[in-house]
Length: 201
Image 1 (cartoon, rainbow, N blue to C red):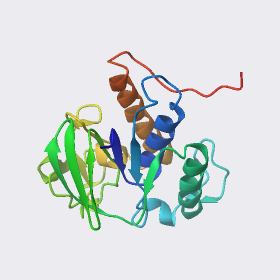
Image 2: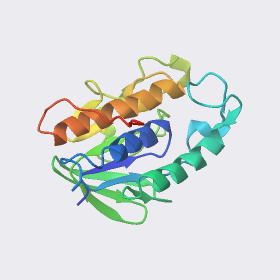
Image 3: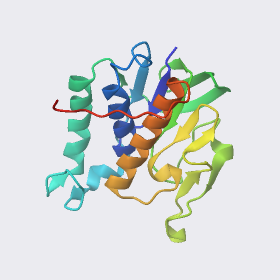
Image 4: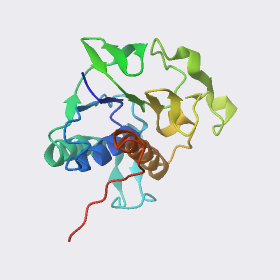
């Protein structure tokens, strides 16, 4: 049983995983099992190059950023399980007992975070009822989002990045993933507002 499984290895998903990973020494996180499906094949970063993203060296290729992010997560926070080469097909159950079925396996989790982009090819069974037209994308692009209130789709289900209705900018997607990570940390901290900072002190 995972405490949270993140679906999507792009900007928002990896950002969420990094913030959760960095909180590993907090008393209310030490016993939590965290995982991420690092499927990146369909990420919009595959064709991106960055000059306008804070903290990213100008000229950085999105494809390189994707590869580096999984390596950095494994190096800094090896306690987070990275599930590679599996595509999520179905979600069943309700909070705090979900079953996620992929093309290869099934997993149990208490919370789910979905960050797989806003393409209208979205086809995860169990979430189709939440689809609506993307509110901040051009209609001709036919983008979609999941209905949500401040990233929350339903109890135990969160959506991040462009699929949450945000515009397609790296900084926005990263912030969205980090925001949900702090929401989950707050949940684990019995509702007491919290975050995760690193310091040189």
